[in-house]
Length: 202
Image (tube, rainbow, N blue to C red):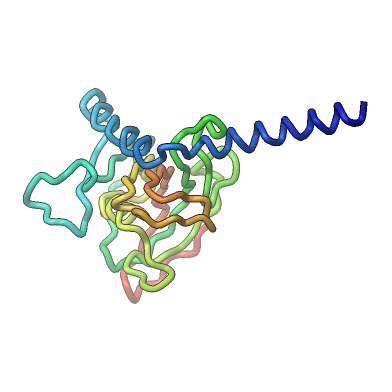
């Protein structure tokens, strides 16, 4: 009886491990195929989707598909102050970052965020950051590109190709394999220019 139980536990553990490792089989190809489908979403639902070319690239011509961040507009901020942050501004955001769906994580593995569990702009914690930060605090270009077009209160789901994320870097300490498309629920809570103190968040 004990031998049967041990064998059963061992087989279960191996099976779960196999499932998790297979989540990342052909990872680059699967991420590129996933990102390619977003163009169809933009064509089919132009009122709900937008795309923006990376802020660091020439804006005067059409680029490759992976030069763009795609965003599904979940909700828009209200009020008359419809300004967007500038590159040198500080921003206060709430966010949750995920990978593309896999067998083990059908909603995508959550690797970072200020939200735990279900994302809710009204109750999430927030983080304050400088868009033009340097060193270890530097933001990926896909994030900056989206924020430069958002208004206070906007909640977008943004899709960042690996070229505008971490590229071929394996961020295993964060659970992000190389060539990962990054999916973020992102809410711009507030922003302020250099030299101006951002109001305390309530």
